[in-house]
Image (cartoon, rainbow, N blue to C red; front, side, top):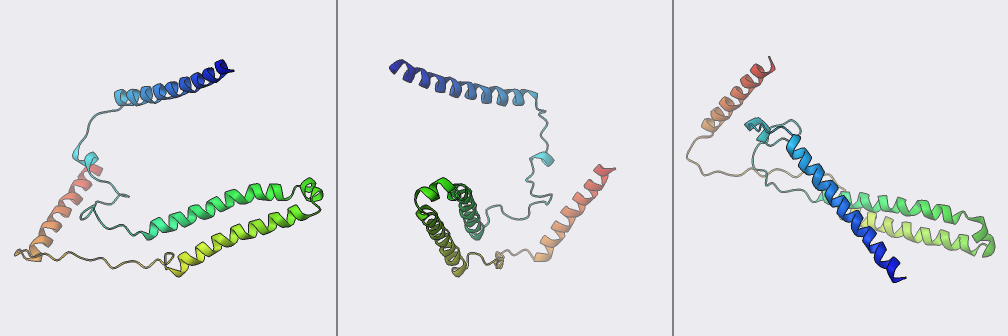
Length: 170
């Protein structure tokens, strides 16, 4: 009995070591085969085809996180409903308990769904499901340089990029 116990752990260890070796070989192979020619365009931050404007350290709206959690909760609810539905319909269990099994399963699922509906109502009452876009707070600068100078620099910068983009597309 002890020999089987040790050999089972040995099998698990072999799978773990084999998986680690497989990952390391894949990463090393990709590092050796990939092209290595970075340039400023490739090293620039990319977000959906738009050039980034401003600082990347912006405040993230926590409503996205809350809505994602609510989605996961109801996704898990569906994962529990399918096995419940298959067990609830077993005729042999219902007949063996004179119908008590069916009523117990039904009440149990109504309690489960009720708790989740209460959680949804709570999130709704707290306003976590409202999609009110917050007003951006523009930083106030105390610079002595007039704003039109900044505007001209930005226009010149983006005009040059537009010309460069036009030349590279030819």
